[in-house]
Length: 160
Figure 1: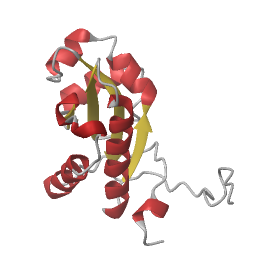
Figure 2: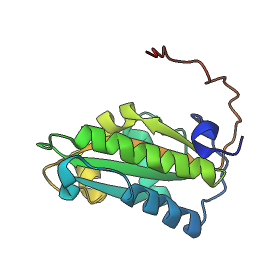
Figure 3: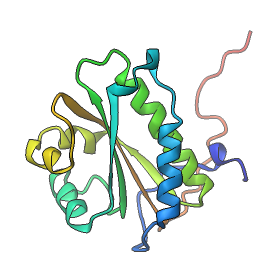
């Protein structure tokens, strides 16, 4: 499958191989290209985590909800943003599709985001601005598994 949208699957096991800096830059560009409601570009921010010590702290706080991924994209939104949750989801999808395009695995993590919001000291260490909360975490890395799921007929589609 060559289309990265169709190629993207949830990967929950990663190798120890680091993601290249060139790939990280491409993933950041994908984040930057994501849509946002009402042009509120200041309502969302992201922390890219590749530091091993911070990754370990995040795994500890989230009860290993990040699957040992070597790279995390922590997407944060203003608490009072009307469209922040939607914007963060769209940004996460952009990152995951680009990861598939780069032959990397990824997964959308909501539980990890919720647990990070209970750790203000770690959020401060991650540079998350006061007044922001973590909406979603995207784990990225070289896939240590190859999920083979048929996603061609997952949802009901009504055509009229």
